[in-house]
Length: 498
Ligand SMILES: Cc1cc2nc3c(=O)[nH]c(=O)nc-3n(C[C@H](O)[C@H](O)[C@H](O)COP(=O)(O)OP(=O)(O)OC[C@H]3O[C@@H](n4cnc5c(N)ncnc54)[C@H](O)[C@@H]3O)c2cc1C
Image 1: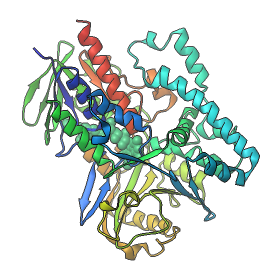
Image 2 (image 1 turned 60 degrees about the vertical axis):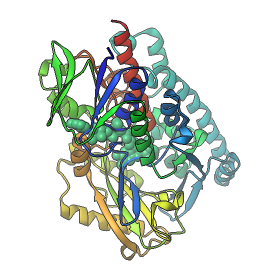
Image 3 (image 1 turned 180 degrees about the horizontal axis):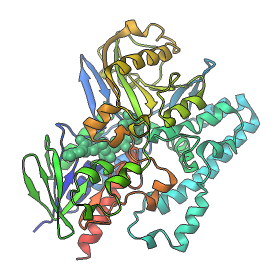
Image 4 (image 1 turned 135 degrees about the vertical axis):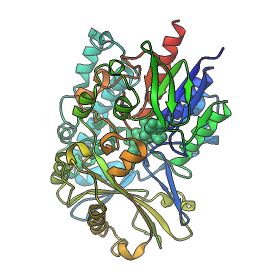
């Protein structure tokens, strides 16, 4: 008889883990509290505008494609992609704007315009960071950890030391380039995973390197195409998704996970894979304290969380010429902006990210109109200490609009808006069960990374596995797709050892 696997959550990681296991011959059933697949990779469709809700930047496209290839399918049939150039447009506080290209000749011209020395520094950074990335990929990102010996062994310790990740991202970059704008350009990406460039481990300087050498891509129809495609593929393989099914408990008997119970039913299974955010799941879905292991409620509350965001989805009455697909507008005082976010103050002068998906796919808005997604990093609940009120959201909207006005064509933003929706940390907490409204889950500090991050195989309950942002290897679509692969491998390893 086929072994049964219950998966909690149809987020990116849950779907991809389910596809792998269904393909491997397990009988897999997903239980998703919402009425759609994808979790944060969701969509808002209204008044002719279509917005991606969460992720927007496609990096490491081969990891996306691998999900379909694993199932013997051609990814092009599911997620047709195009490479973007420039990867983004950056506007600094002095109003200067740069389009950052992956084309080497363009990039070199841009760098040499600053100075030859900085150009040399940049290429040294690229080469050193690539070598660290190869080490991280082989020895940490694509490897799961079970017991202490998986980490505390001479080979892994030597590789960990070679990663030299004790420095901060910003200080690491400053070793190669002295120009302040270049330093920002090569370190602000730690915000993609919700941590500060001034505190976040230097290993995350691999993010701009990955953008630069593998490119930034766009999936036709936006990110939600990926979520829909994974759900279809899973169903084509014979898997079943139960939508509107809120799991209330992971059932455990004699130390082994043996099913899930929801508001509707109890389902028995041989294994459980949990894609719901780890801190939430440990607090709410694992009921008995013996099965939580070291992750007691107190421990979960004392852990460090990534920042949150305020997100505006704006349907505009007309096209805006000055925008590319991805646009970053830095705060006048970036250092202050970052310290505000991580010390619990809502930035008065924020940096903002504008995603104009309609620049890559005009079908995402009515003719001659623009769909904009405006993201502003703000503190999560663990440092902000209070939820957003409706008044604060309205006040903050004014701050965001005043920043948007610095972009050519958006000077009159209030009068251009024909559709508007705003998400705050309250929404991330309530809609996606993201603990503390931390949009990127547990912060990937050194003490919460690799062996020290919650494992893909639960250490306190047998037959229970985790995938998603708050477990190893971390947040971001390609990384949670990797966590799904690791969780599936761990499950198979246990099943095959019986
Ligand atoms: C605003 C934002 C911007 C981002 N930008 C990027 C980007 O540009 N590029 C990138 O690569 N990454 C980006 N990320 C990160 C990326 O989106 C996430 O790391 C990834 O989507 C997380 O997927 P997941 O499967 O781990 O979690 P989730 O998407 O949170 O999925 C968890 C699923 O579990 C379900 N669930 C929870 N509790 C229960 C329950 N009790 N019962 C049943 N179901 C339950 C939820 O409804 C959800 O569907 C961004 C994230 C956000 C929020």
